[in-house]
Length: 358
Image (cartoon, rainbow, N blue to C red; front, side, top):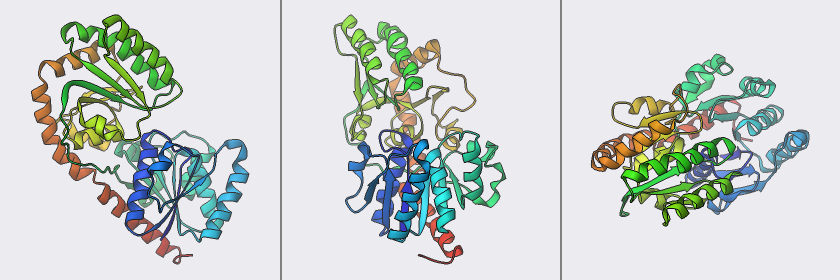
């Protein structure tokens, strides 16, 4: 089948990584896959047979974007649209309605309540949620009934044969102004406290965004004051997997947490809004259903986070053993192959219901 994936941007981020992996996996399965997005660093990680088309999606140019997408659908005889993130979802739903082809949308987080969201919820043929909490509790999409589906992010991993540094902790996130606040708190307030008891620690920051240089300044100050390189801010890393494999502990949510656990690496669930704790056997199902985001938890706290890092460093063996158990759960629940099969089944059923391929 001919599949069109729409996403506004194609740089660093969970949704963008998801689209990249989904495009490649569906291409591997023998489908013709097209991606329309603003050019970004993920473009070079697509299979050579996936066709990438550049389009800088902006609100002010919506009518022109819509005309272009409709023309593209007709010219390439697209069978189905799969849109990700709010602006692309709105464009995809309107284009699908005009061109009379099915539209699938994926909700990666909390959608904003506005006219575009309401139209998208009404005109989408299927809405996929990566978090069960969003599926069960979202006001706009609550009335979808059998139009909704819960399909968790799938990740592709390799065996972790790298030598792990148990003193190395890695924070993975998009780095905009909100996320930067948490990372700066870590670098300025948390790490200096932990260093007093565990002077051998090292800390990586992986991610890209407008606040990257502010974080680098704080990291430089920490390194200078301690006369060694403690914190390294890497920015965007095309191949983040090798860096995760070498880490003893990962801090993050979503795909970063999933991939780390699939490699048997302990994880603390934390982002700019919610601070959970260590993912464990006891709380795994909660985190699994919430895309490893600590929903309904309070925001990051300096004392609590410093305490968690000390707890990990004081008994790394215990956390490594529990992560090895969780590894099997994650590899079963978050298989890229399983995710791809389930999504392709949805595509096929919608195309058949609409009267077949173009």
